[in-house]
Length: 144
Image 1 (cartoon, rainbow, N blue to C red):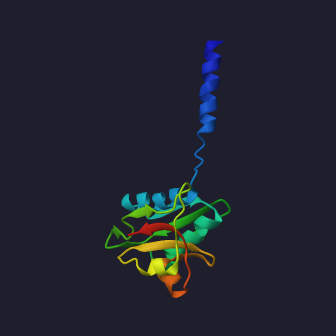
Image 2 (cartoon, rainbow, N blue to C red):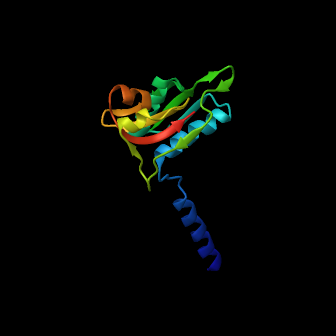
Image 3 (tube, helix red, strand yellow):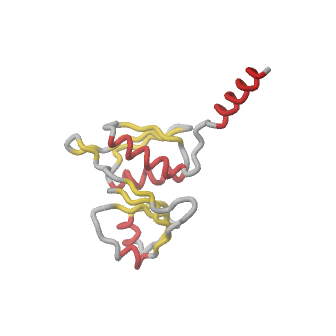
């Protein structure tokens, strides 16, 4: 009887640990960073609208070479230059417990060699595009 209870507890623990993620966007960006640091050329991630729009924004900025979409996953091909990944650092700015918003004037004050991803009413775009379109929004991540 005791052994049966132990087995049931282990099975219940396995069912609870199914790999669900509280912050899919953060998981997606960290997977890209880890894959690039491990010199992986391709990456498969679960599909969602936000992840797809962020992947398309990264493709426009030249961090990702190709974005393919299936029913349940998105396949990415990471860009390398001289056998070194372009993406070296990813910092998550907005998190589920604390969202960070900036307007155009605040975005214009930011200087540096990095790319900020901004979620605007017109979709997910880079900071440079947001300034050109005069849009503010939620700052998702900083990519170097």
